[in-house]
Length: 238
Image (cartoon, rainbow, N blue to C red):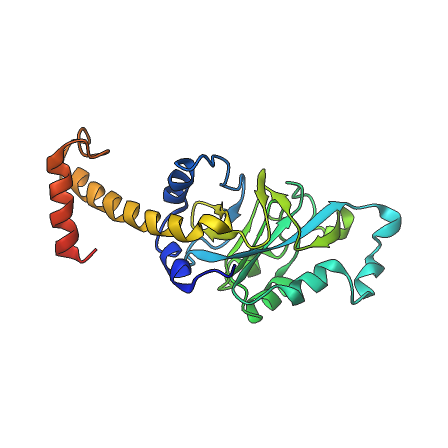
């Protein structure tokens, strides 16, 4: 099921924190990818369907530098197959000692129209990536080539990334705090709920900054809070 364009647009307006709460209400507690951070936090929110790549530990006799001469090398093939609007998510076993990719491959993803890239390992060329207008998330910078530690194996299969299960087609959202995974079958309803939650939290923030107590306001256990929110929404067209 392809990501609804309206759902994509809604998810670009909400935070990963709000999405965590929306999924927690549905019994999903482990959807925020651990220890992954944006290289350029000034970019807009990243949203796209997951397209995955899985690494295993490199075995030296199978992973010399010459493997890059093979046009069928899974890392290169994945970059060329990642669909427009998708987010490439890489399982690097939470090991950033060797790079999952670098600026050239990531630039190619950007030019091909991908929405972003995520690894629970590290990327090399982080100074270049920091100025690239393309959402890039990793654990920390890493200079050594991936071949020294990782062996690319599977393309677009279920993976683990930062202790979160990621299935192809899951909806990936990345903001300044990190990256969140939404199961595809609940993406539309979660997006709608998150937009509603964001409107209410914006109202609450405004009230709190004016000096209002959170008791009865957050959550809105007092009718007055609900009435005030309704007036606030109408005034702002939200």
